[in-house]
Length: 436
Ligand code: OOG
Ligand code: NI
Image (tube, rainbow, N blue to C red):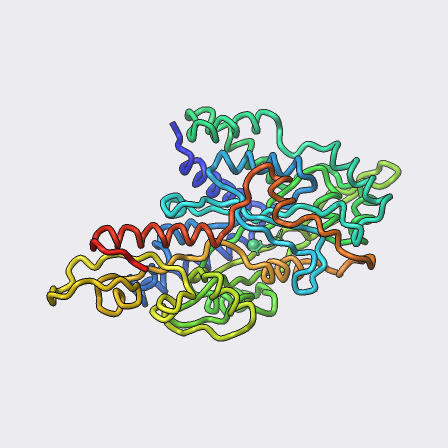
């Protein structure tokens, strides 16, 4: 039997193998990431593993896919549900940082500490906002809706195996093999010729619209390794002649107390694609749809910490201050060998930390940042597309997304808070106190 987390790990590894074969610059990115991680580990020792073991970090990836309809999103949720990944977070990229991208997104990922430690594979998943009149007029909307309704992204056999894996949380070896084969294939770039006129019609609205609705399949558009020193990675990729985007997105490096997520990428490379002309003739063309990205992860921030970050306010520069000011998420653990001074443990977490009763371990940020996501999308669009004026339809909020995906869309803050609260309850229990 292959258990759910083993399926997830195997899927991530096979996807990585497929992507490396098809997008060679990705292999360079993975090699350089590994090189940097090994050096950081040698230089910083155990400290380098404070936000995840080196084995977790080395195999850690996130991917991104884009789909066209709620029905397709529900199928995606079944495929990832098989792998123990649930939808977390709602990202509306239609107005983030003025980006005007016709998508709303969520991320499928494991949600418990144990499952994340086993394999934290996650997929940023975007859904085209077909009904937003700022992007699609009535005529284009109806053509797009018809086109999307007629395609099949995931074969029924894959979905049936997925449902079984999700229900039973494991699959027999042969079924697991079949599931992995079909699942990886569903995210490969299809060799089917692209209808050039239709693709270009959508590209006039947005390159993202064309990438999603201009073809009859979906594909992983990037796969992102995790690196322990992204500034060093950036220098080395540039030195190897790979042209990276101008910046590293997200918060600046904060020695000893990195927070949230820092990301950078190289632009999609032109790949040969078969194109079908209106007269039916197939010619060779090229499209830029697959790119490379790398990321460094830091400490998850509480709502208050995050609000400060979003307002551009400085955050304290140490883990300790992030913890005692309630700005970062930590789990708390009783220090087993604290020398006894006859005193009773205090009921306040700051005092417990200060007096050496407990230590705090940072919770790593497992999610995404809308502004960075918009930047990553944007860096891969050759033009900004067109947009009609008019008000945003206020649909596509978190509740709408939950309805579309047919599952609860989990709140990232609530997940971190649950981990924190559980550890505090254990501390209280072990010390025989109530913590306020
Ligand atoms: C997704 C871009 C967002 C990230 O890491 O923020 C993303 C996409 O291009 O489809 O992957
Ligand atoms: Ni990404």
